[in-house]
Every structure is written in structure tokens, then in C-alpha cells.
Length: 229
Length: 229
DNA sequence: TCAAAAGTGTTTAGTTTACACCCATGC
DNA sequence: GCATGGGTGTAAACTAAACACTTTTGA
Image (cartoon, protein in one colour):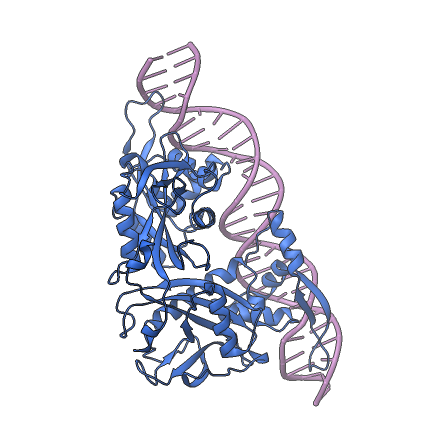
């Protein structure tokens, strides 16, 4: 059992939790640290991995502790392990990113936080704790890349949504305008959206509501279909 | 310093090292384990992360120990941390993948290996050690995805290569035929290849040799250019 | 009847796919 | 001169981009 001879880094998970707010801004959940190091600095929610706990499980646990949500899109991002990234000693952190529907959930704030809040992704506070600036940067890049060839964006919207909402979502994440006509044509042609009903009581022509049909998508991928925006 | 209160998993790096052999097969370097657990099973080269060592550094160290090569494409793949993945106890492994020009380097074989050999990627041995089957699967998928939108494939070829060699490379990695005319047009139009000279002493019309112009590529990416096959 | 957002038609430019052919070299 | 890859021309099908227009609702 020679493995036990080696000194070991501590192992944590950190979560980049993205949400979309009512006024159509992409936001990320940060907590204000109660303790040193980096007391009162904003940081990503995270914590230590238990000895008998899978990494994914640890990340989902952190996510649920902070937001109360389960069963949302969550995926491993990258593992950060620079020797001096934590002043307390060697700490390696496996970062995850998640997409949640912000309207349905408010941050809870864990014990070790002074405060917790949703911050605008394109207008972040300075001096984040540890290397969290870098982690966030990578998460944004990954989200922007991934959203284009995997249908994960739906995770940020309510279960039923209009095509305009969906387009707006993509414009926010990709940070550039899209053409309405082409967006709709493309989206509908893929055949992974299911028309549900119409909006009601809006002061304009009511839009069709759609939901993402995951079964159809899975079936299509099996026969070579590729999602793409 | 409460971090020290927690029991810690051991931390290792594993390397998926890809190479292209003379007869145009994609191969991966595996070592035959000398010791238990999984004695005499094929496994990915890897080892423990030193306490003051960056993860990337550890991966590059492993790569150099096994192959003698430095300064090749190497990138973090994913971190594997299922509680029972190593029978000795909790071991979390950060996996990397690398691309090397196989013709210029032969495996060295480290101390803890009975044997080391390049195995065909699409014809792997059964019963790899630990979860290395899964790691390899993910590495192949990542390579196939990444090679299409980042110019990393060149790492598998000699510094100078013909367009036919390059096309062959893509056909091998993507595991499907590509159209010659279209491949060439697309490749050359991107403007990241530099024509060097001609082949000599071949029993057919001599082909132009090219090299990948990294500077040009970097410059182009800065002005919004996207590599794509 | 007006504002607001939903939703559609159509033209043009560009890209992808496919196939067929010619070219230069060593043996 | 012929086998072997190297290299090119071009038509047809498809996709993306751009723009302008019509429709439906509540107030």
C-alpha cells in the first residue's frame, strides 16, 4: 500500500452556477467569504470532497446546498492545481459549471458565507478569491463554445419558452445579435422543439410556447444528427 | 488551518499519448504493469503528483519519462474520481492527452512497467487497468472533436508534410473518408500552411511539402478567424 | 387605431458536395 | 508507356445572410 507514503494535496470542488435573470442578463452565483483567506472577497461556492464521494456527487451537493436545485445541467469544467493557488497550502480544485433557471430559485447562502448574490457575468467584481477569476473565465468560454453545438441552453429557461426568449438567450450568451428569420428557421428545422400552446394575456400577438424534446434529440443524435447554432 | 483536518484522496496524473505510425494507424502508448493491483494488465502511463508541482508539470514529466519528448501538444482531459476506481484506496486522477510524432520517438518504459508498447486505438486490448478504458474512450472522443476546430493534428506529423498526409491524418482520426478536392481547397484557403519545397525521389509526381505556420494562425485567430475541418 | 412583438417570403451570396479529369515522376 | 499519387475545373445542391413585409393581440 505504498500510495499512503505520499503527502497529498487537499481536494475541493468549486461550482460556477449560471442563471438568467428577468431582465435578460447572464449571471453567476458568488458568495462573500466569511473567513480568511480572502475574507469578504467574492468567491465561487465550493467545498471539500468527502472520502467516499464521487466528484460529480460532491459538485451536485455543493450546488444543492447553495441553490436548492437538483437535476439541472452540471458538467466538469477543469481541474486547477497550481501549487500556490491557496495560501493555506496545496489545494487542488475540480471546477464544475451548472445552468439553472434563476426565476425559480433564490440563493440560500451557506454557513461559511457572509452573503451570496447573482453577479452579472459581463460585469464581475474585481479581486475574486483564489484563482476564481480564471475559473470563471474558462467557464464562460466553455459555455459559449458548448452552447453552439449542444442543446444545453434550455437549462437556463423555464420549461416552456418562446422562440424569442430562446433567441435572446443565445444572443446573451454569445454576446452578439442573431437574425430572427434565420434563427427560427434553423431551430425549428432541427425538430427538437415541441409546440405546446400559446402565450395568453400579452399586449401583442401571442407567441407559441415550445418545450425542448429531449427524447427526440437523443433519438436524432443516434442517427447522426448534430445540434448546431 | 482547518483544511488539514480532512482526510485526503491521493492525487495522480495519467497520460493518453497518441501517435501516428508509419502504416497510418492511430496508436496510443500503454504500459504493462509490473505490480499489483492489475499486475500484467495494460494501463495508461501515470504517477503521483508531487506536493509542489503543478498538474500540467506533472503530466509533462510523466510524458517525458515515458517517451523522452517535450514541447508537444498536451492538454488536460478530465478528472476521474469514482471512490472505488483504485482498489488500494481513494485515488483521484487528472487525465491528460498528448499528441506526438511517433516516428521520431520510441517508448522508453519506466521502472514500474514490465513492458511498454504502442497499441492501435481502434483495436485496444481488453481489461485495461483501473478505469483506463473509460479514460481512453473519452480521450478519443475529445481528440475527434477538437481536431475539427483547432489545428492540433499537425502535432502527429513531421514538421513538413504533404496535403495527402494531412488528409490521411484527418481520415484516420475522424474515421471517415474526406473528399480530396474539398479538403485541399479548404485547408489552403485558411492560409495557415506555408509551402516549403517539393518532395524528391518519389515514384510519382512530387508533392509540395508544407509546414504549419503557427504565427500566422495566432494572428488570424486574433482577428476572428476560426479553424475548421 | 396604435404599439408591440410574433411570424413569414424572398433574393442573393457563399459554401459544400460530388465527380471527372489532367499532370509529373520513376521504373 | 504505364503505374502511382499529385493536383485542378466546374456544376449542382444546399445554407446563410439580409431585408422587408404581414399578422395578431391588448390597451
